[in-house]
Image (cartoon, rainbow, N blue to C red):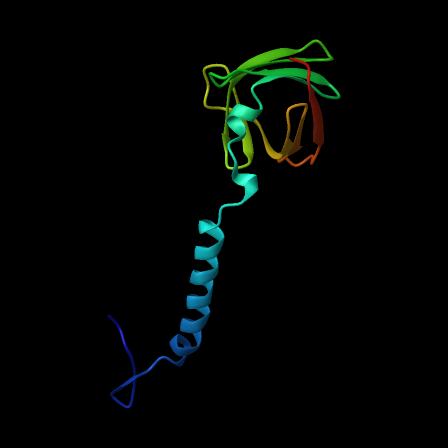
Length: 130
């Protein structure tokens, strides 16, 4: 451990006295944020299982974490999906390559709303068809 010396005497670091209360506050704030459970942290995995239609596609999310989608352009694709917290991650078939990810805004029996986290900030309003 190194010390700062002035006139061959160790010098106390004044920054640490100012920094310690700040670090303690940051620690407490982080502890509160990460330990709080809110209604938004519910299990969306079960809620989105089914077939959903939005503005440009029809998606089926299966209970075994597979998904299949057909877009209005004729493109069809599938893969596997998971939800961590309130984020939906979609992967291509047999791949760890992330295809898309979305923040889940709301889920009900008939509606499912997600926000694209890929930079285009598109909100997709889905309605259950099966």
